[in-house]
Length: 148
Image (cartoon, rainbow, N blue to C red; front, side, top):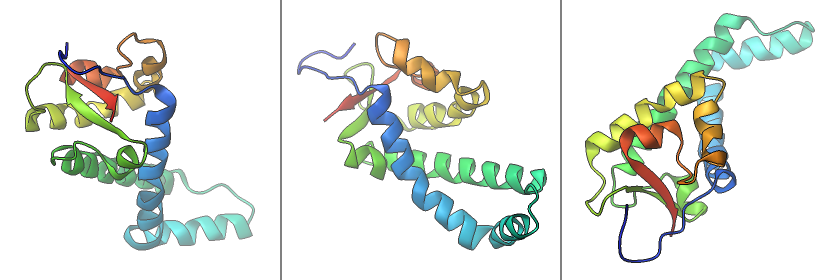
């Protein structure tokens, strides 16, 4: 546990809003610049009143997931220990102990978000019921998310 100053853990809602803030530009950039064919497929599907081809949806989801994880690793490895969404929500990632957050923890935390999301997002929903407000990825990496 963290000793010293009083720690206020960040709850699910604050963390979810931070996630949404982070994902908006990622979706926009992926949709318009990285996968413009996805935008074309979406527009055709609307005009033709049909579903978007599943392969486009899968490719889009995987692309945004990988970009998100990469950006989370980059931002959380910095002195800020927070993504832009976390900064706006006034929260950051901390080590469970008194030592600084390590690069290894940041990578483990963010790569294991894949498992938290794959299991019907139960790893993220777990934050609601966990006394330490940790998702599965936080527990694995031994991290917490706190209010600044």
